[in-house]
Length: 156
Image 1: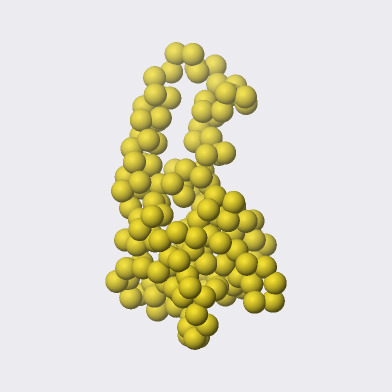
Image 2: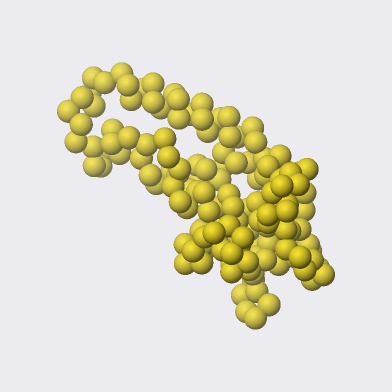
């Protein structure tokens, strides 16, 4: 199993915002700290905004902040939101499935159960648990200038 780049970036964005509470963060700051493309981040941030994970602000002083408390963001919810459009296996995609075994294969059922167990395990994990007390992560992602109070909703 391999996560999509979009899911990976979504989690990086959320962790970056969570490590920098009380501050509007900008795409270029996340891109620099997380070794990511600003173009890819723009797409991910747009989706995170549409799904209600982040609040985006346009303009010169624009950027983003968490739209929810960190303990109200479950990792499984984020993964499902970003991975849903990507079928795990060919037989999971009814429209494009060409597997001749689809009608009798028992592996599909086992894979569905395994995938649900994977998401269920991630449903138990919150953004708070990823960042709270994680000094190494904070060292990597915390911005030096925290003087701009933005009332970040998602402080841990």
